[in-house]
Amino acid sequence: GDSPPPHPAIIARVGDHPLPGTRSREAADTLGRLVAGLDAGIPVEVLLSGGTSALIGAPREGVEASAYLATARAVLGAGTDIVETNRRRRALARWGEGRLALALGTRPGRCWVLSDVPGDHLATIGSGPLVPDEDAPPIIPHVIIGSGRDALAGVATAARAAGLAMRVHPTPLTGEADAVGPAVVREAAAGRAADRMLHAWAGETTVTLPATAGAGGRCQQLALAAAATLAHDALPVTLLAGGTDGRDGPTDAAGAVVDATTWGAIRAAGRDPAADLARRDARAALAAVAGLLVTGPTGTNVADLVLALVEPV
Image 1 (cartoon, rainbow, N blue to C red):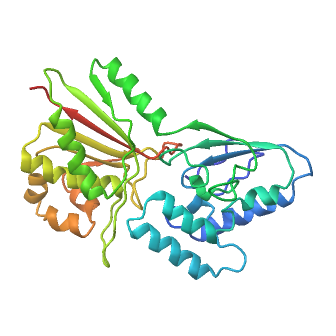
Image 2: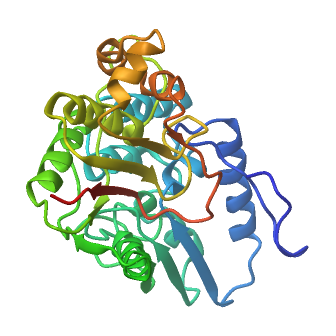
Image 3: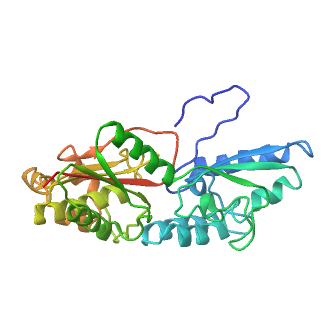
């Protein structure tokens, strides 16, 4: 957000997300000036999180800004997974492919990482500002201090405290949100037992945008797709899908909460949920029935959580 920095010695710049913009370029420029002004040999501690690709997004020397932005826009709307998305973005980015490490030179340091990438792939997180390419080790040591696994562990702790039976699904969620939403609620419902059961997944799905798209994000799209299956199959499941950073796509919501009544409620509110799903207008559909999950910024980013609460047999 635009809140003041936590200490007067800290220079704060707020970039744009998910598409890099003017503020992102200003952040990239500020980083460049800061690095250039460091004394030789001074130790450097780098804090890196998901979202960095956009937040300090700016074209490298020799790349037109229009070409850089066009690439960023294209990969975000093409349903491309995060590994391929950042492979294409970092080749054009000012601080991608280890270029920040090159600017730091021989200064000693460490990089503390909040990973939003399945498998914690260092060349992918934030477009690898300290990692020259996928096959090379990082130029300075990286320490993963938070990831989707930690978010799942937190959910499990909360579930136990609430007396809920819990199943954590270790395989990261990937693929089109339209397919993942129905798949997870069917998988959860298939495991119904005598007690309420909470299922949890972490990961990052994708959304392929039509030529004219509405507003939403991958969690809202996943939830709306799940709502169709919940209604059609009359499944006793409540699903929550949310971004751990508190912002799903270019919207003010972290995600959504749906159940078997949501699809019909959207119709009763005067909208066509199938049309909203097709044109990627999930936010409007879910807002019509108070289905949006709005948390505000959380201060972290370890990808998305999907939770499915299954009622007992």
